[in-house]
Length: 351
Image (cartoon, rainbow, N blue to C red; front, side, top):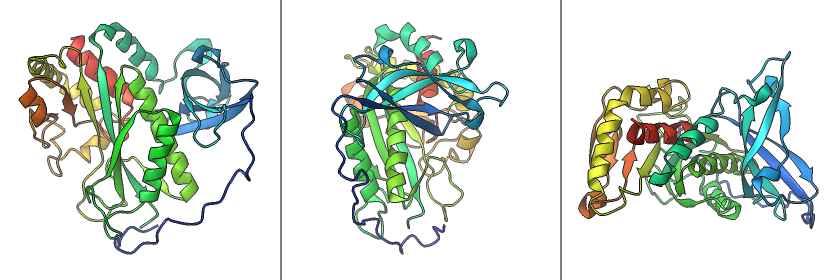
């Protein structure tokens, strides 16, 4: 696969085939697709089971097991790991009563696996629930194997069919997708999830990522959320997952004071945060946060109004209104949203 020539590519638009042969969803049974994060902390796995009926609440989904030795989460001599349903979404592909189920992963004795960061995030969100933390995350990604910001035209935009299909799939699933746009690097796109409160941010972004991979699969295209893929040719922007954050106090009149106080607190935990903002202890972000291409420097915390070269940006309108939110521009595109949202809340509300 080559991306050397971004101006010569074939369109993705091909005749659509009904892959289900016109078979209608079962009127009462539920195909529940359990989705979970594997041992990489970045990739997703799934498998499906039939339930006699769609559960009326998340607690009714049965605990299920899987082979953790095949997902980098166990050894063969002790391979069983467990899936606990924590959030459900409508299945936009199968329709009917069928669902997509976001799951936490557990070892024996129901101990969270190493990449089950949701469990700790939930503890943080429960502690600070009275602050009503709102999040919005901007997921950047790159489409590979099929060869400019908000661009239009075949020489600038690649993969619009995938983007639009993913958008509709998210809406059909009940995900709070706020929008989408082309990004600077050819084949690079972004979608935004939110506003979501607390733990829902992580649940929704992970499921939106799952849907993106699932849609791309149908088009025969690869999705990369690497912050700086080596396949890109030339001096192009990396990929981030900018995180918009506010509390009830920030959203009230004169909330700008609380926003600035939060920036000062984030400055104090910068080194710790940088180790958490990508799944490889900060090493992935070192390739992206160079101080160039609308990024800050990885080793220095900065914040400012309308400055996209800062670690944290306060939007111009927020400054003018005197209330609103801040944008943490440090998280990488392959970050775990559970880790990022929990880290921001710990730094600004629990220190």
